[in-house]
Length: 248
Ligand SMILES: NC(=O)c1ccc[n+]([C@@H]2O[C@H](COP(=O)([O-])OP(=O)(O)OC[C@H]3O[C@@H](n4cnc5c(N)ncnc54)[C@H](OP(=O)(O)O)[C@@H]3O)[C@@H](O)[C@H]2O)c1
Image (cartoon, rainbow, N blue to C red; front, side, top):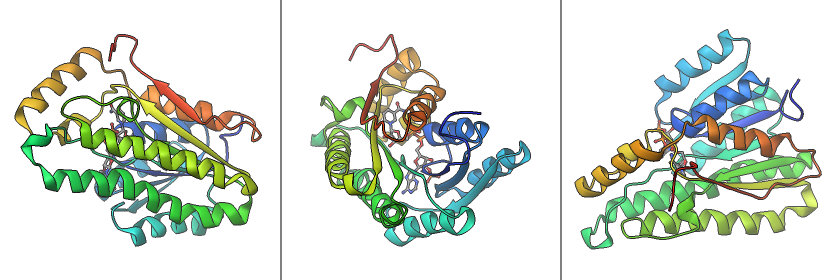
């Protein structure tokens, strides 16, 4: 038995690859019920089927986090199927880095919509249930870029600073409802994230950087499991981790 993970109902956005998928695998192996949201429903179904075949409980729900009603439907599906929601992992995100002078305005909007508004919609969907339960746990995904800014990632960093600000405000507001709030800020982790970079110069720099330093997605899943597995009275608010070989 895994303390405080077994039997929990966990909703994960961005579960079709990378950090979300690795977290679904680890938590399912530790007997949590996982409810998987992302746009690529085919990948979610393959994952849910695999976890179910291994004896886990998993549900795939097509979800675009820029649509508030779709995020609500994802969370409501968890409550309808498993009776409650214990953990909401607001993980979906993208990182199309480029210098501001490239004026990639569509990508700025997309990052704001997915990385910030998507997290807010996740809060909007899960908070009413958690308030009623007088229990719950938000795990929001920021980044090392939520702690420092550099050329080429001003907008991405702005969205990840926003995730930390929202999470801290949420943390303070949900005290009466016995809800925990964790922000996890990973360094370079090997996922499909670099594929979201369209600017050729930035893409080459990032692929090289990830090839040199990135660590497996399991590292993030272990951080989630650590925060979840604390006694309910212990609220781990921030986890910042990097590959040991990552300097910046
Ligand atoms: N990997 C890293 O080094 C790193 C470091 C710091 C922070 N992060 C953060 O970690 C989170 C997960 O990224 P990752 O590294 O696992 O990258 P990834 O492998 O590219 O996964 C991103 C996930 O987000 C989902 N997604 C994107 N847009 C979406 C939308 N509109 N609606 C629903 N889901 C959407 C994708 O699913 P669909 O395409 O199927 O919708 C995918 O499942 C992101 O917030 C990222 O900023 C990653």
